[in-house]
Amino acid sequence: MEERVLEVSNLVKNYGSFRAVDGISFSVGRGKIVGFLGPNGAGKTTTIQILSGITLANGGSVSYFGKNFSTHRTECLQRINAASAFNTLMGKISVWENLFVFAELYQVENPRKMISDLLAQFEISDLRDTLYKDLSSGQKTRVNIAKSLLNDPELLLMDEPTASLDPDIADKTLSLIEQLRKDRNLSILYTSHNMNEITRICDEVIFLDHGKIVAQDTPLNLTKRISSATLRVSFDAHTLEFDTYLREKKLDATFPEPNTVAILSHEAGIPGILFDLSKTGIWITDIEVAKPTLEDVFLQIARKDTV
Amino acid sequence: MLRRSGEVMADIIIFPLTNVVVFGFLSLYLSAENQLAGHTVIFGMLLWNVIWIVEYSITLGSLWNIWTRNLTNLFIAPLALSEYILAHTLSGILKSLIVLLVSGILSVYVFDFNIFSVGFPALALTLINFSIFAYALGIFILGMIFWFGLRIQAAAWSAVGLFQPLCAALYPLDVLPVLLQKVAVLFPATYTFEAARFALANDGAIAWNLFSIAFAENIVYAVGCTALFVLMYNKSRDSGQFARNEV
Image (tube, rainbow over all chains, first blue to last red; front, top):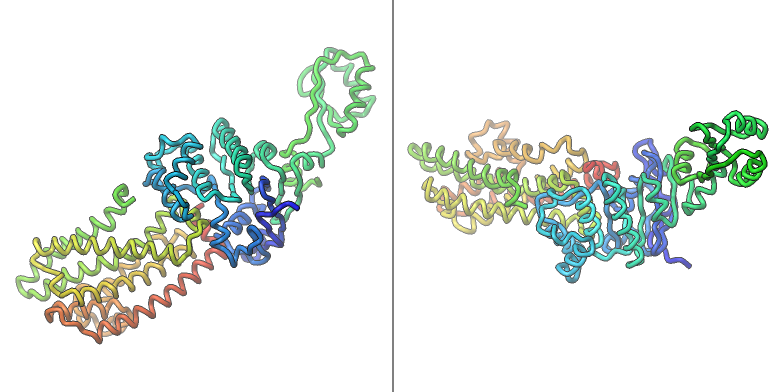
């Protein structure tokens, strides 16, 4: 049986009469990356805040490593850590000094060696004496993640760690997270608005909406819930000729460009369409199948369509 | 951080020392007519700085963490709330003692006033009482900031100022109107200032009755404000304000 590092049971949070988190339950297994998605106001941030202990829940329970968080707070916090794009370190002290403060708080056995190793791993050893406020966004992100690894955590709560990073640095950060999971068997609860990131690194995705879990599965299985796909066909023939074929077959299609048609169909129907097309004598120059993405799933949920 | 932060340097070193210089010259002026009156003024200001610096360290120390969005990082570390507050309080006491030492030496040479002449026992009792009072004020104000958010952050550096006239820091209690005297006795700092002035006027003699009342009131303040702080801290976590403070 998979070992659970985090278990959330029937979590409830009310802000006055507004229910921000509505009885959600989920778990994170050891070495797994779980994505936490949802539109703004879905309850993601509130849940992360409760999991961090900085916001109190009105009901339900949170357990880390089988221990109740509210009764074993210090013990649990010693074994987890967090990195967020929205939290920074002290600007007027150096990278080294910031990391040293947190190494002391986490009672790291050999703080100097741990900090040196992390700085080297993140290729920021040359920044050790730089004031934190003088770092670029990408450098700050790397220092924040280095801070979150000081205690060699078993679970990391990451709240949009790549927000405000340029694509190159964001890609490097994701590679780093993938490497960390591989090297340390680290479990991660990861929130992001970037669907490509979630698809790339997460083993499982939890969709929240109005404080409730509305979908929970692997990224692949979630996208399979949308059965339609778009078949994009480029052809060397008169558009009218193709239009006649489409009318005859009663297909839902548009012409985004001259000599290109986008046909919306169930995935299962695509081979049949291609077979029928091959018999029309129309010269096909290119075929592309656009399968549904996690973003499509997200949009369906956000727009209240059924997934 | 202290040596790299102009704002903090100004607030806990330059501002208190400037006050000592201003009130030092005032004391020189007053001493020409009445030496005890002159000494009372500079003595009060030197001691007031202790309250100011300890309270400031507790509240502004946390505000700096909020402003730099680092407070959450600290509170998701295995750091107990009591350890966090104790660290800021001890840091404030240490800073206040350094400033007192520097300004005390300055006043000996420039203003012909030796604060250490009241003797170690009276000075120690005074500093202990002021530290407890400043702690109580500091955590009460910090609790309010946690609960109500940064819109009341100015209380961190301004609220303590309200107590300076009420606690009769720079003059004897009986200078205040009778009504204000009745308010003043509600504060332990009032008795501490009275006891300190008694020691100043009587070669370091200790007014045990005044120090005892001050200490008893301080305990009530410290326990009460600690309980209120924990209540406000939990309220802020319940309302989500604690996390929103950094947004």
